Image (cartoon, rainbow, N blue to C red; front, side, top):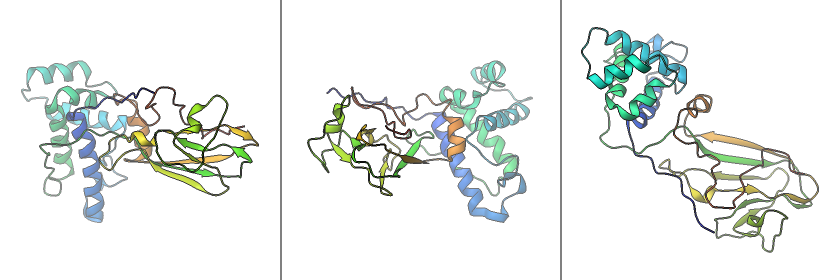
Length: 254
């Protein structure tokens, strides 16, 4: 079975943007009631990963640079794309200065005495994505219905054969037991996709299987769903190896 790896993305202005949003949220939480009203969770300037917040920051950038001479490529980008939905993150990928303008515009309104962000010299690319998965088994299944991790060398059961899914006889197959759960990380602690988390739901050979998924994200989930529309790839359920069956356990297997 030939392995198929996801591309490794180099850090860029978009990577820094996501990190800065996370930092700003944490800094506001640290300040508590001392943070200005406009950056409190109910305020207009509370940082968000959402597409709408990009437009909010772009409006500030346009206002702040109206009478400022910018590098030609930045000015051309703002003129052509400033009003587009995902223009800040898309532009920051190629124009790091655009990210810096966003930080400057927000800090000016949030309070430079409270919010002084130091841009790191080196970071790892990361974007909103599933970090941890909990799958809860709601009933006992007479036969079949395992959750299989085909790349694992561990074994809980052997000699499993499921029609149409050879992966069930490979790797780690977790049997469905009522009110038990499978908990696994989709990413490493460094926000790299963990290929060992590649998994699938084996079809029940006898009976019906009921289950429920709980996804935990490395960033705010509701905002992350919005952010996923502009990341370069979405890797929460990408196949790692040819022939691997994507996880279908959020559906009822029968």
